[in-house]
Image 1: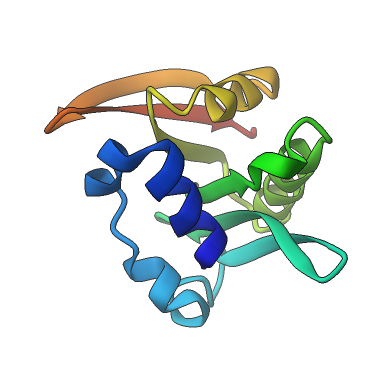
Image 2: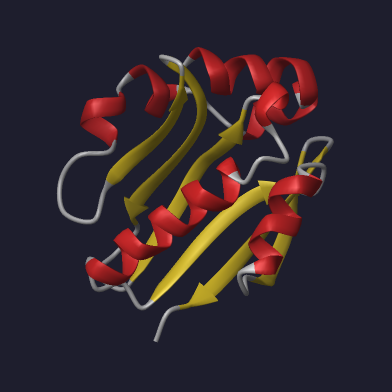
Amino acid sequence: MKLVTAILAKEFPADQVAYAADDLRKLEKTYQGPGCTFFVAEEQHEIVGTCGVKAENKQTAILRRLFVNPRYRGRGIGAGLLEEALAFCRTAGFREVVIRTSNRMEQAIRLCGHVGFKEDGSWTLGQVTLVRFRLRLT
């Protein structure tokens, strides 16, 4: 997805080491099957936001690729994508949702905090500090 790779390259170039783009090259294969989906927000036939859900196991889903085009931020698109993803996770029967992000992705961290995600660990990969957030659904 050009949107995701462009945002990573422009806003978070150092973080790309932690976010291999393999899933983006094989979207249909990566996000298919039980407990997996990929949401896309569009405006006037342009993709302006994304959010993937991937089953880690039967109880836990992982949110991935929560990105919004900088020109469209502040309009609730990220919040809408997150709510759709969480609704999907509830319907799919997951008990918790995890998102891993760089500590530099402040807007994503704030958004997740607003819906109840709590920090659940961090680690360093090269010059990047990755943080895991967890939300219990049940």
